[in-house]
Image 1 (cartoon, rainbow, N blue to C red):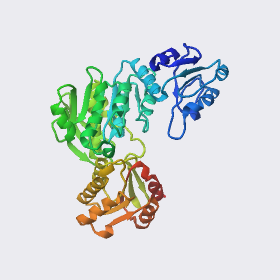
Image 2: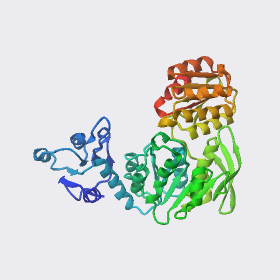
Image 3: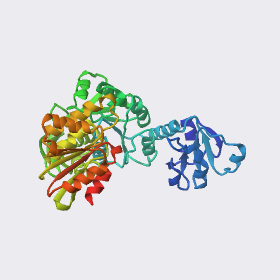
Image 4: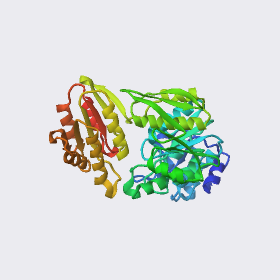
Length: 459
C-alpha cells in the first residue's frame, strides 16, 4: 500500500507529502511509534490522538492520518519531508484502510463471534489453520473497531486470517464484518452476555447474524448446533451455506466417547468418514465444543485431518482464560476471571465439579451489562451453584449477592455461603480458610479485578 491507496480508501485529502510513499506498518499509539510508521490519530474517552500527530512525526512516523485538527500553512512547512492526510473521521478511516488492505489478499478469512468462548475458540481455530497456512490472528482482546483493523493491517504475505469480533450493541458486528469480509463466519453460541444493552436473546441472535451480511459469496457459516437459538435459525434459514458442530444434536462434526480428565479432554470424531481420537490440552466440555468448531473450520479450509488433530493438541489459551495453577498445600486455582456471563459461569462451574480435589470452592463476582436482567441472571447462576453441589460459595460485589441469596433459598447451608463486598475481604477469608487439596474457581467480570484475589491467595 502507498499514500495514494490510503487516500482512495478514506476519501482523504493530502495536505502535504508524497503519493508514492509506501505504507507498511500502522500505529495508533505515539508511545509505540517506530521510524517509518503510519500514524493514525484516534479520539478516545480520555485523549484525542489526533492532537499528538506532531509527536508521532517527530518520533519517526513518515505519514500521519488525522481528523478534526486545524493545521496552519506555517505548521505544514515544518513537515515538508513528511506526509499528512486529513480525513473526515479517523476511526472510520482506520477501518476503511484495513478493509482496503484485506481486499488485496485473496485468502481465507475466518471471523468468529459469539456470546461466550470467542477467544478460546479463536486460539484453537488459529492453531489448526496455522498447521497448513501462514496465519495472522487476533491477539489478546483486540476484537473491536480499533483492534480488528489493527490486526488486518499486519497482513504481510499471510495465507489465512483468524479474527475475533466482540459487540454489545446492534450494528457492531456488521461494521466489523465490512472490514473483515469473511470467507468463513463462526458463531460459537447465543447466550445472555450484553442482554442489558440488547434487551433479549432474540436481539443478541440478530446482532450475531450481522456477520453474514459481509460473508463472501460461497462462504460458509459455522455454528454450534446444540445452541437452541442457532439450531432453530439454521432449520428456518434457506439462504446461507451452513456447517455445524455439536455433541447432542445431529451435526456435520460430532464428538462421541467424550472423557473429561483433570488437565485434558479426549473424544472421538469422524473426519471424511475416518475415525480420529482428539486430545484437547485443557479440561472441560466447553473446550470440546471449541475444538469441534476448529475441526469444522479445518474441514472447510481443506486442512489435512492429521494437521487438525495436531493443531488442537498443541494450542495454548490466552492468559486469564481457564488458567489452572497449583499452589501450596496442593490447592488448585482455576483463574477464569477475564469476563463472565451466565453461560460461561455455568461452563466454569461444570469444570470445577469435574476436577479432582477435596472441597470445590466457587468465588464468583458481579456480571456486567445485564441491565434489568441482572438479578434474574445472577439468581440463575445461584441455581447452577446449587445443582453442581459446590461445597463453598464466596460472592464478591452487590450483584453477586443475588447468587448467594439464591443458593441459601435453595437450601445450601448458611455457613457455606460467604457474601463480601470487596476483593480484599475475599482474600482474607480464603487465606484463613483454604485447606489441603481444595479446588478454587475465580470467575467474574473483568472490571471486578479478580486478578487481585488470584495474586492474593497465590502468595
